[in-house]
Length: 414
Image 1 (cartoon, helix red, strand yellow):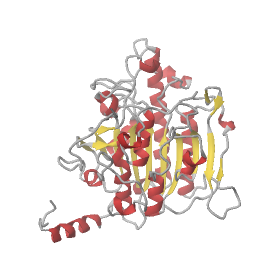
Image 2: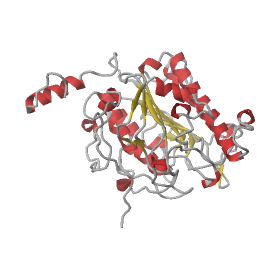
Image 3: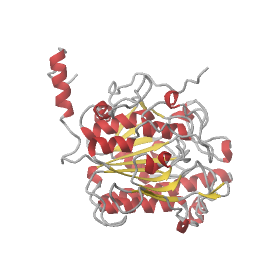
Image 4: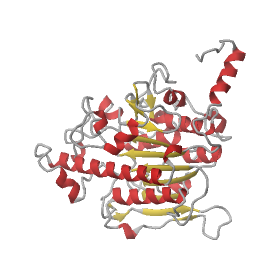
């Protein structure tokens, strides 16, 4: 209860209006949003969770400048978490319980409006994606450029070689764009980015993310200066998912430091390369004068595989289990967010779920209830779907500030 607020219905409404009027940004334009996702990163594979093995100063800096989410949960495997990030809907409603196989006709329901579409609808964001999609690839409407992103660089499938970008004998690294109505180009351009054959994916994705930021910051990095609209950059890296591959200079840094376990050595190297990429992205935001007006969040898509599962070895200490399990090691993951309106150096044990990002970010950006931005005819949101947890983030995760008093891991149809 805010000081001076009455419990009468009329005064409650007035208090809500007064809180919503306190936007997290000083200008009339909503803040930029940079949503960074790691793949299979272990709970204990960042130094701000206590690990002294890898060293992740750039990811740590996001947490130090904002809030560390210590009771943050996702789904235990890839496509389900990504579907919840983008749709705000729980797997019990999307029906996506397992990762999509290469070439599958399965896809996230095309009737759902996704996060970039909401941000465009509510606040005219310009949305760009770099990285792993894994939410459908058999029709144009299921690709990132069909789901609200204006440009896309990355791979549509779930796993591939980091350097040759080969998956089951096919090249899957694409440079796609959606064009505005009335332009001379076709509505969507799909182009295999063959020039990146031989480039480590973490480096390629970082370079494109920096170009997008430079375009918004006035550097003309992506085909000239991009629109003077708020930026939504979704950056789901490939790292540290198998196959275990890293540049030699990173592998050498962990020689003799992993008890002779080559798998662990490679995971450490990949995580370090990921952290360096995150550092380049945040440096670009600062260099272009966008850092103070940017909300930057970092999340893993699921817990890290442990005990040789999937041929790899992450650390989720002190949590039990890992990827592909409903133990906390599979669902409770690294999460941090910083930006306008969020207290610095906060640590929260309040409940937050992957489904909450869509309603939270839409409410933050628009300064009004996120439900006001639901398109006409949208399928209804049901119990278990996302909630607006922006008040929790603004409160620094103070006890009792979460909109949640329960979390649902999974329910499988009987």
